[in-house]
Length: 306
Image 1 (cartoon, rainbow, N blue to C red):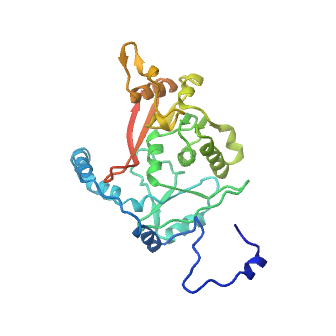
Image 2: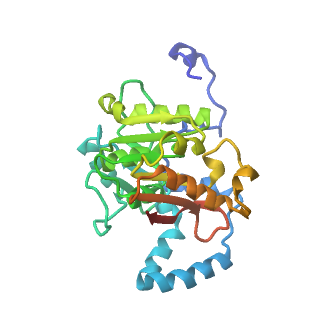
Image 3: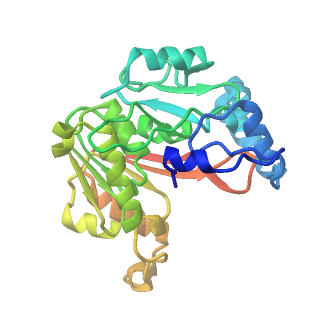
C-alpha cells in the first residue's frame, strides 16, 4: 500500500542495517539476479537427458549443435527477453536497450522473421523493468522468455489468416503473433476465468482499440471449439497437454474409444485439433522441455502440415 507523502514523513527512520526491498518489477542488475539464486536449492543437471540430446541432435544438426547446446544450457541469456510493441514503442527505447547491452534475439537467417517483430535479449543476466497496466495507454514492450517466440515464428502467420491461440493466457504469444502479421481473426482462448481476465488486460495493454475487431477472447473448453468452428482456422497454436486447454485434466474414457480400439489421449487431442483446421493448412503443437533438466520448461516439440 502506498502511503501519502505526509504520512510517510511521520514514519521513524529505518534501523541500522535494514534496507527497503525494491518494488516488484523494478530493473535488476546481474549481481542481484545472481544473489537471488544463491540461497535457493539449485536445479541439478540430468546427465541422462544431456547424453540423449547429445546423441540425437549432434546427428541432426551437425556442427551447429555445439552452439545450440551452449544457448540451451545457459537459459539466463534468453529467459528475460524484451518484445517491443510495434503499435507504441519509440526509437529511444531501442537505443536504451542497446546501451544496456541488449541485442536482437533472432537473426535474419531464419526462414520466417518479419521485420516488425523486434525481440531483444542480453548476454548477461538482467531484467528490464516491467510496465504497469494503465487503462487507455499502450505498453511499449512485453517481458517474456525468448523461447516463447519460437512457436510463433514456426507458425509463419500471414496477413488475413485466421489464427487460434488455444491456451492463450497470459497473452505473450498472442501479442507476438500480432507483431508478425495482421490476421483475419485472432481467436485467443483461455478456459481458466482468472487467467482469461489477465489475457484481456494484456490485449488492452498492447493492441490499439481499432484492431479489437480482429481479436476474439473466449473462455471455452478447448474441445468445444472444434464443434463451434469446424475447419475454420488456418493456423493453431496450442499446448501439447489436453489438461491445459480443457476443464477436465483427463479425457473421459468414453472419448478414448474408436469402436473396439482404445485411443491414446494425445491422438484424441490431435484429432480434435485437425477438426478445427482448414484442409491443407498448418497445425502447430509445442511442448516445454528444458535441456539438461528433467523438468518442463520451453522447447518446440511438434509441427506438422495437413
